[in-house]
Image 1 (cartoon, helix red, strand yellow):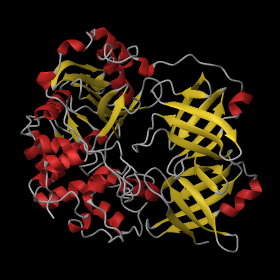
Image 2 (cartoon, rainbow, N blue to C red; image 1 turned 45 degrees about the vertical axis):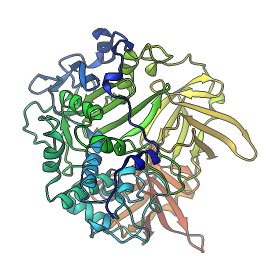
Image 3 (tube, rainbow, N blue to C red; image 1 turned 180 degrees about the vertical axis):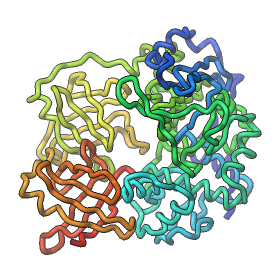
Image 4 (cartoon, one colour; image 1 turned 30 degrees about the horizontal axis):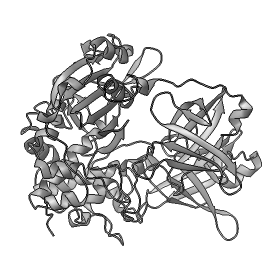
Length: 565
């Protein structure tokens, strides 16, 4: 069945296009001094560091643009609005629009099962649809995460390797549409579908159908390394030293778009004049996904549709080796901030809000740059901090968070990220960077200690993200660890994990990969050192002995490794 795009369909799903640019009053934005923006990026405003290219747009017109730091340390080339940088996952919105364009022409339906176009994939009991790939509700395991579990690194993410990895999977993370799990690999599959339906390479399709019509002549998926003005990518390596980072990705779709600040302004303008995709395409780009239960997501088509201090926003951040990016739009105010950085230590998702705060000072009830301000701290003793420590999980088990204290401060660990929390009183903490608040409630016999992040950092619209402390961090004695040793094999990954014990605890050994120390989280569950991901949950047979491990992380659930000896 071909997709029917109609005003009735759009209104049924509750999306209404924003007013057109002629409706806005330019005087409502605050006057912003260049020095105010310079101060946000001051750490990069020098010639011995990589940095960021920054742009501020009003309905697609550039009202500020500047580069901070260097595009190439080796050749002493400065970053500028003309520098070409990798968008990382910000690329996903371009992939989503490519699919929508084909749907508008009747060449596919967004509700088609993906096996209609990718016959190599397993035939799951419940078919996965194109729409579910777009909204990250497919349940398909992420190909990049699979490669990292199997090999420790992404050796190759070609189309052939991606399809081969997924062909070996005998189950999904969850039934399609039942939950949300961010999936980079799903957008690799979307790009492959575009290629098979259009008969063109994804790079050629996007060039002809998006970039050339919008005059984005410096934009391309998988831009060659020799392209003029391309900014190199870096990772910090000691004090004031940087290591060149060479992206090895060979797939376009989930990432891989190289572009400039000036070209992104032209992309931003398309959300107002709708030159490519039209009003119907724009509506579908902003249409939030839904779960089978009817629960709505904030994630649409490569865009997060959210709010910030009462103002609607669409945004997406990005990360690729050496590149970090953020594209933040306030459609009701016709204001967009783009921050493209060429160093892994940058936090453009914070700085974009810092810049927006300056321009929206007259629109929101907060002081400029207060996203990065820290509320007045309230000191707590180590004994007082112990009340909050432990392992916390969401009801569905998708989010696992560790809270530990170190040097008189509460440290939150979610996945591979660690960040210190500041006590702001009334059993509330923040991270000093974002507007997220972690609140605790008094423990009771029924629930024990509970915590909640507000606003909800996950894309599921359901109030705050509620977490429940399952127990304090497990601290097994040395003799308890010996039963977790052995060799474990995953047929789906064609990989063997060997777990041994030394004086410091358990160590995971994989062929050709650096050994990984395992830390206990809670009873029978371990994770990589200083992380809550991946989680190794050891399971027992009827005889009480361990016979397999189920491995989960942010993109894979329940990957089974059977004990072989």
